Length: 170
Image 1 (cartoon, rainbow, N blue to C red):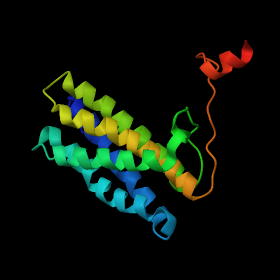
Image 2 (image 1 turned 90 degrees about the vertical axis):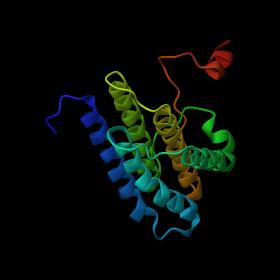
Image 3 (image 1 turned 180 degrees about the horizontal axis):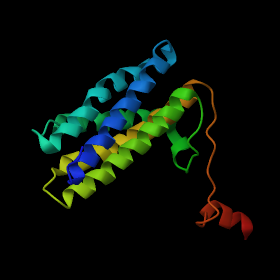
């Protein structure tokens, strides 16, 4: 904990990610309509610790792991369709909101890994895995809301132009 290396910050971030995945598990335990999410989370839970140890220790994230994660992303995208083609507010049922927190934690882990890469060599697969993991948590959250009959709430930015809004203003 007293090391000066950014590696410790990365390990703390991925520990936080792993912990938050653990929070989602009991929320979905009794929900048959979200069994696929629960099954996927059971695989992702230890993977967050594998990412954690893959910088200081032996690289334990494989191309097979990345390929599986990519297939899960494709599955959820197919399930939620058009819903994810817009910015959405992170909200919904409790499980979905925690999946959004996991998404945010994966992004923070990615950023912490970037800082580590400024100090030492980091395998590219870890960046690929964490970036994709954040996207998987997002589509899982949208899917979970869909399974609970909760509508997504689009976010309309007042800071950046919106193509749809611009057309309406003309």
